[in-house]
Length: 370
Image 1 (cartoon, helix red, strand yellow):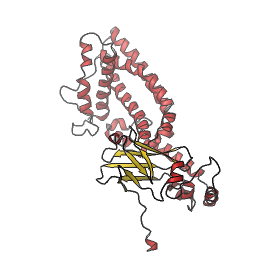
Image 2: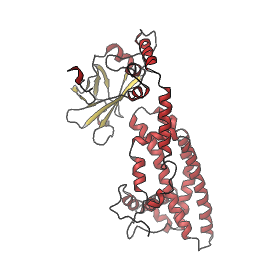
Image 3: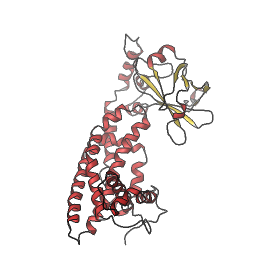
Image 4: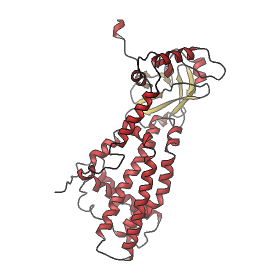
């Protein structure tokens, strides 16, 4: 007996997505005999994605929603995959560059999640196209032959996209910090879980372990960290790197006391976090190991409930450790490390519109000293 799910088993919201895709007025072009417009191709692809996702998840869409793509719609969806594939592959090849250029950790996460979400959608679309091809096996018409040929080309384009993403698997393993992979696995029909694609079959987890092992191998011993600490405590010359050691220590300083590599690794990646008085807004700084005079330290202002950027704060005055700045149109405030080094106060006090925000990451009290 095949496994089927009811609408209430739809945590990803696939049924509403299918409803929206079916209501797209651009699909009328297929009834009017004009299925070659770009709007019609996009609408057919969106419908194939939504329907295919329901198949992958084993959802029963319900009366009026279930059915197989028509040959003309499946052909249009296949051609849209072929059309988009070159851009998908180009984006996959520069995934690392785009990730490196992103200033904010949430933006970095969105870049990686977006790449694999696109690949999951292509899987859904090809599932619906494949279903349409199987349904048409009893017919031999020019349209069916054309569908089968273009479906093969679409599957080839999907494979090329797959290969490009696979080359980025080390970077993509960072997506494991989110629930995306787990949510996809949980949503899939049982028989699809028996033959998972590489990004769901444990490859990313193994890659993450490999990256972790390599990182630990690169972490110097405690003795080496102590020597580095002594070096960076020396006065900087000219444009040498700086340590804002009053409140924003470099990783070399934090790691100097580490007794082993594992403890040292655990101290990397510090984050400073504040919230406004009513708790609705949040500010975050991700720390790095070294700071250079004219490089920027970025404060991201977000909505605490949704994680979206607080763009309504654009042009509002802000101070960090007494150094004045302004929030830009994207919800960021940037401070040069030179200004913080020369003028900042001894504590990382953050104010917006003269309101002091509350630190959320204050270090816990040391009970041994009580």
